[in-house]
Amino acid sequence: MPRAKILYQCQSCGYASPKWLGKCPDCGQWNSFSEEKRVTSLKSQSAAEPVALKDISASQGRRSSTDIKELDRTLGGGVVMGSVVLIGGDPGIGKSTLILQSMKGLARLGTVLYVSGEESPEQVKIRADRLHIHCGEIILLPETSLEGILAAARKIAPQVIVIDSIQTIFSLELPSAPGSVGQIRECATKLMFFAKKQGIPLFIIGHVTKEGAIAGPKVLEHIVDTVLYFEGDKGNPFRILRAVKNRFGSTNEIGVFEMQESGLMEVENPSQLFLSERPENVPGSVVTVSLEGTRPLLVEIQALVTTSSFGVPRRTALGVDYNRINLLIAVLDKRLGMHLGAMDIFVNVVGGLRIDEPAIDMGIIAAIVSSFRNQAIDREVFTFGEVGLSGELRAVSQASIRINEAVKLGFRKGIVPFSNSTASDGMHIDISGVKNVEEAVELLMF
Ligand code: TYD
Ligand code: MG
Image (cartoon, rainbow, N blue to C red):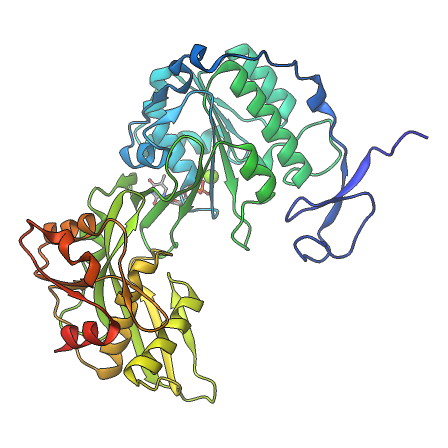
């Protein structure tokens, strides 16, 4: 008997099973399986020829600028020919706007094929007018079938392809609905083969599900070369473009934008922006330095410590890891004898930024202590350092780059880990190296 051509796939992680399941054994999601057709299209690819490493010309890794510096930086210095870039983000965050703005620069390569499965040509036109993009090289294709897109692409022979968004594209060969894991994988793979063969860049826009992952996340993330996430919250005009995977550059690089009436504006000096609304002489606020890729960022950490009115105190962390906050609170309890067990504690990174680096530990500690003691920290002082479980302050990488950024923004004094204190040699700033949290707090709150 021939094998059945049907399989069931989890729509949240891509796990495949020959029979329907109520709960995904891989990601634990309930009721997420739907019927898909087995894809057998890959075997038709012709075998590749082996090539000696020295014979490969570097032009295959040629880059092209998008004319948007912040986007180029996140891509690792411009988009690589023949690469596939996935741009993910919440609906309405500005993905279409960003890609449309970058097309002005990309049009230098030749024809740009913009496949819009979400918006009508009129809607795209209105947006393009608003962004002042009137470039003859941009061809709009309001098409959602994969076969139609590939046929058009063969005819037009574009130099760049943009798919907005992958969730709206479907292949006629598969029975499942657009947006299902099977469809996304099939469409992205076929489009990728086309782009790689032609040696042109392909941009794929993907929406993020409410769990924070690009739908069909695992399937798409390893197919593409570069994954960029567009983050930010709707109430805040700042947007952060973050590389989470990049075969052609560093991850952790970020680009900072501000959404304005006339589109996304690049923010050249994010530190200045994130500190611009810093209150004067208020307890619970301190400036710390985080490093995003190669770029130092001065950010304000705020904490609010209040007496809890419930039996179980609340801990809220915005922009920092929740477990990290609990750990730092435990260190404060043990090392400084600060009993925070009956306190609600809220910690926030100002500006909607999210930071995962341990170097901001000391900033979090300082903000909590300052709020707890109701004592403001000097505006012109910054601090950074990783805090260990015994309260020791550990060195962080690239300390001199961090201190230099603080000097540029006019900070007068820094409290840093002892082994980082020589990093400021030659700079006009007063740096104190401390060995543990007690010493740091003493200096910050004299
Ligand atoms: P959009 O790029 O359509 O988001 P996505 O493609 O990620 O779903 O951006 C939509 C939002 O951006 C919308 O709420 C309006 C806002 N916006 C501006 O504020 N200024 C502009 O110039 C543009 C084009 C959009
Ligand atoms: Mg859009």
